[in-house]
Amino acid sequence: MPASFIGELILQPILEFIFYFVGYHIGRVVVSVFTLGRIKCDRILTDTPHRKMRWCGTYHRRGQQIYLTTEATAGVGIIFVALVVAGVVLIYYLRA
Image (cartoon, rainbow, N blue to C red):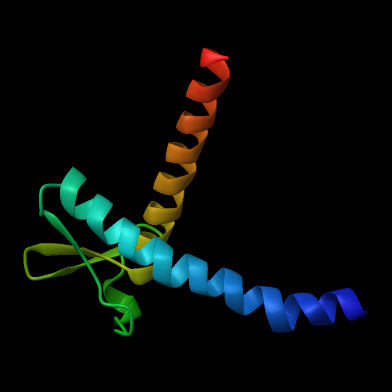
């Protein structure tokens, strides 16, 4: 019981902060660079109508422009960081 209490009160806000704040801002840069500005990212506190969502709710259109949702942008950022860390670890172990 105390472990779940600690996890919910302390770890959950920290992990949500990492996912939504750090992951979002890294993902925003990654999406802009890799798509050359064709796909844009929603702002953090915008609420998009669910009827316009496409492909499991990860993106939507506003006119001709494609926008990734906040969660999808944060996911891209976290995946990018994980790939970079895995690459650095792999290079470190291959050199040793």
